[in-house]
Amino acid sequence: MKLNKIIIAGGGTGGHIFPAIAVAHALKQMDKTIQILFVGAKGKMEMEKVPLAGYAIEGLDIAGFNRSNLLKNWSLPFKLIRSFLQVKNIFKSFQPDAVFGVGGYSSFPVLRYAQRLGVPSFLHEANAYAGKANKMLGKNATRVMVATDGMERFFPASKILKTGNPVRTEIINKSFSLEDAYEFFGLKQHKPTLLIIGGSLGAKSINHAISKGIVSLIESGIQVIWQTGKGNLELVGEDIRKQKEVCITEFITKMNYAYAIADLVVSRAGAIALAEICATGKASILVPYPFAAEDHQTENAMALVRHNAAVMVRDTDAADQLIGMIEILINDKVKLQSLGIAASALFVKDADQRIASEIKHSVEQE
Image (cartoon, rainbow, N blue to C red; front, side):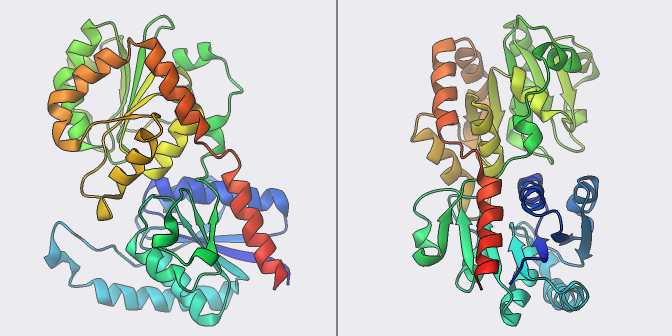
């Protein structure tokens, strides 16, 4: 059996979307004739990012479980039923040979329906602690690709393949000069540079700690690239935004430039953010999001901390400890170098190709 058509399902955040696109690119490199259709959730960022990457996408009328306001979940069963009907129509029209799920609530009905039909289904679990949907789907999946050791507690050992986490090809693209990168952000080459990334939607505790201490950072001779996340620019006064030592934006379009010139990264501990930090060999201070399902971001962060590849600050301590830690660490070049080397050693360089190869090989073996 030849792999002619595949559905890639999931999204909601860049941590799901960008690895999915990386795997799609890897599949196309192996066989240009493979037809790829993405399935995501209407209104989410995949509906914009996937077409920009050159792939078709279908949107489902589906929403995730709202943990902060349980009353808003009343319509969830109806949306799930509707999404299954939409998935049924997508399968009837596209007729995939395989389905690959990257996480996010839009992946569940797609993979569940594939398993019901006997279509080969593949999962990727990016985190050190598996999500509920993936745990349910993993029992009947053809193969479960994981990023870390010890995932036998969540999935059948015989189905697990450790592949690492794919990262965007542009993150590790170094076909530019550092001068171009510094110029892009309007910063100087001789100053220590701090990169702050709280995800596409921002990180409240990080943003508040930085907004409170950014004057101190500037006075310490540190220049800052700060991705506040959508709708968070108002946290920063206009007088600060006009400072030559800072570049503050809702979303960084040239992340490869940002990583290239960063001496230190402050970040949440989403799996793909950590993969990018390791891919670029950067020292980091991680502030895990405490309300992530099963507190998986703390598990992700500890996977690096245990290898002396990152430093961690708890979300509740960020307001009091983050600025002081930044100021100490960014001036300790020996520590920065050791953290970066240890992080780099954890990166799996060809995760996208490993995943694409496993999907293609498994389908064509049948």
